[in-house]
Length: 277
Ligand SMILES: Cc1cc2nc3c(=O)[nH]c(=O)nc-3n(C[C@H](O)[C@H](O)[C@H](O)COP(=O)(O)OP(=O)(O)OC[C@H]3O[C@@H](n4cnc5c(N)ncnc54)[C@H](O)[C@@H]3O)c2cc1C
Image (cartoon, rainbow, N blue to C red; front, side, top):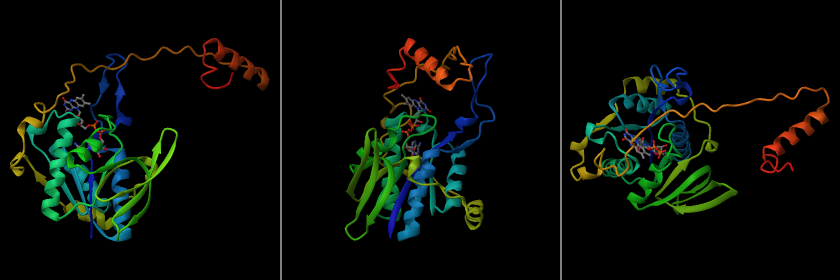
């Protein structure tokens, strides 16, 4: 049976984060924590393969104890097991340290439940937004990576070959790869399912497995958390709101309005950029 691992991160719902106009700082209070948007697409991809071929789906996350809730949501959607890797020593990790711990976790998942055939990640997170963890994990595990995947075309179980479509800036790439591979999911890949009632009931009783530093005997402590992070965020700030001067073209003559619009855009050098010149 296929063994699929989905990497998820619990993130603050950025749609709910506001900027306080007086202090110009982010208002995070009361902002709900959600499963990263792209990770739900990664999970759906794994669950669809499970529906079609039968598979074991293990969801993993490195994060604080509160991330258990995110794992339970994945269980309610149909994942078989949820593993939370949580320890103060992991805190403050940059993407290099995060990918180290996520890769170690996948190796331990493999030792515990058998060979992993496919690893799914989101394209990026809503908070860190770097898109580096998936590729980093693939490099550390020394397996191929298929990033920006918008379609799973087919899976040849006999030859262990997957065919996907990758979204590129100027087109689509159809690519075949031998398992095991790591895939990073775009939102075009699918539409995440809603939790089923049996899923919700199972999730309500389910307790995710929690692993800490003690569960990784070969852990290199110089590679985790703040100590293992070569990058340091030295300062964060909210960008100044942009000043926008709006001009409304008011005329009943649509053609004249268009002419005026194109003229104004040329004046500020935008018409060419927009290929309207
Ligand atoms: C320069 C820099 C410095 C940072 N310093 C700090 C710091 O000091 N303290 C701090 O708390 N954070 C810090 N962060 C944030 C932290 O590195 C990221 O949250 C974390 O490394 C994941 O990166 P990301 O959010 O950009 O994920 P991305 O690379 O955008 O994530 C891509 C995908 O990888 C998977 N993934 C990502 N994170 C996890 C995870 N934790 N568990 C399982 N799967 C995951 C998901 O599938 C996700 O969709 C820093 C980030 C950067 C870029």
